[in-house]
Amino acid sequence: MTLSEKVYLKIREDVNTLVFSGNEFLNEKALAERYGVSKAPVRAALHRLCMENILISYPRKGYLIVTLTDAQFQQAQQLRVLNECYALKLLSSKATRENLLELRELAAQGEGAKGNMDFHLALGRLTDNRFVEDVIRNLLCAVTRTLSIHLFDKNITSFRAAHLAVVDALLAGNLADAKQYLTEDILQP
Image (cartoon, one colour):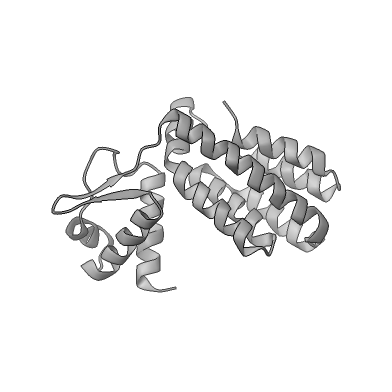
């Protein structure tokens, strides 16, 4: 993993776990100091986050975190349901029992925004379909900060039970239940 990739992942995690407020400008110099790196990997990471619509660049000011409206968030969540239910369909027909047990182990360990993101990204990765995986990643990147804000307001820290229910249904060969649990997980009020 390159230094730029490490910095990108760290900034993205800090954005998604609400380390940065939504109304402060992020700048290359401060981030380089924060992560103990030069400005070059920070610049590359910030550029990538802008391309993913996580940040907006304001020349000579810095970068602001994109804030989704409630309607945009709901639209993205509904699209996640469609795509991730398709991922479950693919997994039900091609994933090995070992793959599903690995996914279950990941679900059992997951906490907070990072655990949620890791689980859903693993769903996409296990489909062995790059396009499904890319859509899952892009939608998660778009909604995770807003999801963190909603969950923080409701004091929800764990997705473990929902994720375990999805995998257990897949292990039992019950795709319909897996889809239902996943839908409830994504669209929770």
